[in-house]
Image (tube, rainbow, N blue to C red; front, side):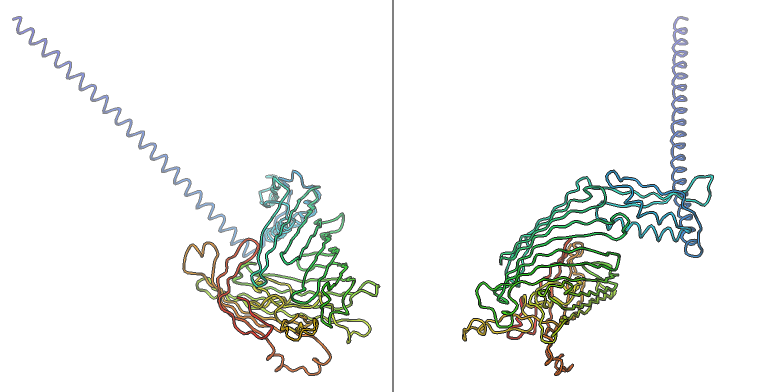
Length: 515
């Protein structure tokens, strides 16, 4: 009997253990179900969040699309409720207010966008901000159809900016040290104070200093003034040295027009007393008092490598406004035109253009008067004609002052066996060019902006005398043109483009080419 009771007890204990195990298993099952239910809930929440984000993006895209279609098809009327300026910790509020007041006059969204683009461009042209941002926000709820305009500017932490560099001119076999410094927004009125200097190994030096104001009191045009001293040594090429002390004052400056007054005291000297006959009469001092007007517009997509657009510049200068008898009197007119056409493959583009200029003396006996040497046109050098607008001054591949009228050095020095030539320059100049640029096959070169190009240039430089006008003919003019052509690689930088010329053609006795 005892044994049977013990067996029953063991059986009951084992059944209790089984019940406990079953209960634990049930509890585990419940926990697992709850855990999976929680995971399912989290997954469902994440899916809902994703769906809400995607739906919000689609909704915003839909609103943006409707806005674009509405702006392109109909006029959206609105009223500017307020214009808020932020970030001008140092800049005077009145300076910014005078530029943004046009925003308050907008009556449509299209007009507001156009005015905001112009205002942004004007503020950027001050060159005193790191960035300018203009945004729109809805107006007060109680004033439907209104908007608030936010103008946010970022002022630089350090108003001082300086640059320094060493440059070389391969064709002239000379080096230069150049530097500049600017102090921006010193008094909070957008004022910029700058100084620059440059020294060449050939004893040429230039020092300048100036300041500019974007506006002065009630005058809406910028005010600029600059003093400069330039000393040049042209003994090897034209047998003279000159020094220029000048003052330039900007009178009118708009988006396309610039009017400036220049007053320059010039000294022409020949220390070696070897100058040729045509320059001896010009030695000494002279005064240059002139008004210079420049009209310019540039619609090209890039100043370094244009691939589309066009540009035009016209410069007119009247010299001889001072009553002094030593004042040089002449008229100068220059025109430049540039075109860039995309070709649709390898980012290729065809750039072509032309430049022309002439100098005509005026006053009593002007037919027998020749312009000063320092005012004449001289060709040569390797400056790219693609980017530059500023009159006919470059014919790619020719040495500095290596093209145009010249005079044997033996005439000046009296050495019959000396075959050196002195450049005389000219007062009529014409140049033209064509340039085909294209991407190179290597990706690393394309990303760096390095590209190849083919080019061809032609130019003519001559003296305008009565005899030449009498015997002028287009055939003779075409035959006397000088040209160069080649292929090379262009390495653009932030300040300029460096070009490597490979092949050049067409040279004559004095009009020598530089490789």
